[in-house]
Amino acid sequence: MNTTPSANQSHIRSYITLALVAMIWGGTFVAGRILSPEISGLFLATLRFLIASAALFLIFKLGRIPFVRPTAAQWCTLFLLGFFGIFLYNLFFFYGLKFTQASRASFIVAGNPAVIALIGFFRFRESLSISKIAGIVCCLAGAFSIILLSRPDLSGGGEDTLTGDLLIAGCVASWAVYTVFSRPVITALGPLVTVAYSIFAGTGLLLLASLFTGSFTAEAAAALTMRDILSLLFLGVIGSALAYYFYYDGIGKLGATRTGVFIALNPLTAGLCGYFFLQEPLPGTVLAAGAVIICGIVLVNRGK
Image (cartoon, rainbow, N blue to C red):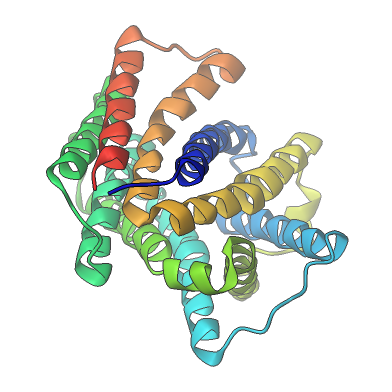
């Protein structure tokens, strides 16, 4: 398949941007650890996306970007994207972590690229060449290696752990749906409008859930420290509004499979951020596994 120099340059920019997104999402693990553990996860998720919604609204207003009116079918898709990618993902994630270890959760979430590739293949017939399959295997092997090297104690657990594992598996399915089914709307409306409207929808659902469960209260807001607020600003503006936009921009230009493999970088970038900002150890074996992930991303994006 022949591509023009301008198309190649656009793809290179997308690769660089998606690598930056992986770095940002690695930083969200650091920001998440800084947040006070006593505060409800649902309340924090709601605040994060309220901030993201406010940031996106300001971008539209300051940039004088018109709020386009999607068709009825597009509204349904945008609502479903918000439901799966924002609302359901966060519910599965925060409640899943109550029953299973974070290490087990990260192991399960690292399977995202494979699930995205499979849904993209069966739903939209995105090609799965030998090169792409080999690249996905490399990404999974590298991501799982990093998690196992960091936390080798993934065995064990009873019925509660199984419940947590299944909830975290729901995260993977939700994010895969959010990734794969967004492309038609991105093509029609653009990545910024798609991200904004889906986040608005998901935020509304999170707010309703927080109010219904009693998580969103004045007492919870008063308990926030300045460090919590700064972390939430990073999570909302940089980790959500900005990163989600660049992620959707990548899907529009590269497709779900080629974009989704960059998720495999998250364990590596989280380790790097932990090393530089939290003085956590970073073994050479983790860097070697990171090199395997990068090779996998190259293979996937070289495949036709």
